[in-house]
Image (tube, rainbow, N blue to C red; front, side):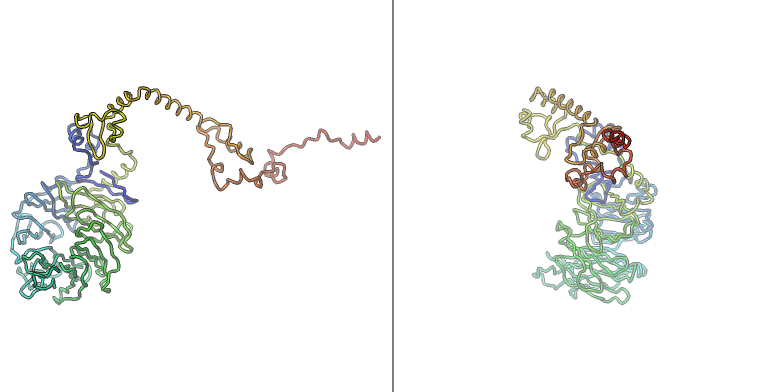
Length: 545
C-alpha cells in the first residue's frame, strides 16, 4: 500500500495504478523481469480479485447491505459484480451499449436499472437483462424514488411546451408517468445562455437529480442554466427554485436531515445551501475548474461531518461547518465516479485506466468488515521503515556529469537513463567515476570517517567542562552526574535551558556558599571553620598572668 501524507490525515492507496511509486518506464520493465526479488511486489495487496476493466471504468456503487460492489466499464461495455465477503468477482456481464449510470433497486445486487448511452433503460437481475425500454431523449442522470417506486431520468432538450423534462418510469404500474417540467430556458437556438432544442450546440438540459430519501423526500433537479428546482413528489408540483449560479449544475446531494443541499457546478464551484435561505451559507472552489462529478455527505468515526467533492482530477474532503480542508486524494488517472463504504474509511473509484482504485483513510473510519485486516496492516506499516526505490541509482544533473567526465555518454549508451531534468546512473558506475575524477577521494573519505569516529569518542568523554562567568562549581556538579553515560551533553537540563541563562552570566545570581542559608540547605558541603590561629580562653589567661 502506498501512503500519502499531505497533512496529518493519512491516506493509503490500497489498489490502483498509483499503488507503487512512479518509476521510469525502463526501470519498470527491468523490475518486472525480477519480480521475485521485488519486496513491493511480494508485499502487494490485491484487495478484490479482478477489480479492473480492459480500458476504463465508468460508474461504481456499493449495495445497501455492504456485501456487494457493482461497477460498469469498457471496452467492451460490461458489468462487474464483486461479492465482498469472498473478496472476489462474482460475475461479469457484457451489454450492447455503453453505460452512463446505474442504480441498485434492492439492498443487494439482484435488481438494478442502468441508463445506457443508446437512449435506453435496462433492468438487470441475476439471470441477465430482464427488460429494456427506450427513452424519448438522451438521459443525463438516474435516480430512484423508493417511496413512489419511480425511476427518474433527467434528460437533454425541451418538450413541446419549451420545458426540460425529467422522465418518470413507474415500476409498479410499468409505464411512463407525466414528466416533471423543469425550466431550462427558451426555444431560441441563437440564445447562447444554454438553451435550445435537442440537437443544438447549447442544448438546454436537466443535468442531475437528488432525493432527500432519509427525510422529507424532496426532489432536486440541477439544470444547464445554473438553477436548482425543488419538486414535491406527493403533489407533483414545484416547491421552490434556487436562482442561477455560475456555470451548469452538475452534482447535487442532500444531507441526512434534508435541510442542507450541496451543489457542484461545471466550473468547479461548490456551494452549501440551507433550504430555509435563498443564498449559500458556504462557497468552496475545487481548484482545477473541472465539472464536479460527485458530492457526498460523510460522517467520520468521531461523528464529524465532512463533505466529499470530486472532479476528474482530485477528491477533496472538507469540513461541512466551516469549509476547512481535511484531506485530498489525487490519483494518477482521471476519476469518473466515487463510492463510499458506509461507516468505514474506504473509498472506491471508477476511473480511466485499467485498474480501479480503492483508498483507505483510517481517520475517516475503520476498515470495512470484509477487509478488516487492513487495520492491522496500517499499524504494521507505521512501525516499518520505508524502503527507498532508487537505492541502486544516483540521480545526476548535466553539471554533475561534466564534473565526473561522463557527459560524453549522453545519447550514446544506456548507462545514462534520462529522467526529468537529469539522468539516472548506476551507483557502481558513479563511484568508479568519482574515483577516476578524484584519485584522492578514497583517502579523503577515509580521513573523514576517522575524524568522525574520533569526534564521536571525544563526545563520549567527560570534557574539561563548560566555562561560564558565574556558578562554575554548579556547572561542574551537573556535568559530574553524567559520568556513567556514554555521551556527555553539556547543553542538557538547566545548562541548555534559556530560562536559566542568567544563572551563569549575571553576578547577581552568584551562589554564596558561605552564607548561612546555603549551609543550612547543604550541611554536607559546608566548610568546617579553621580556628588554628585563634587562641583559647585558657591560653589568654596564661599569657596575661
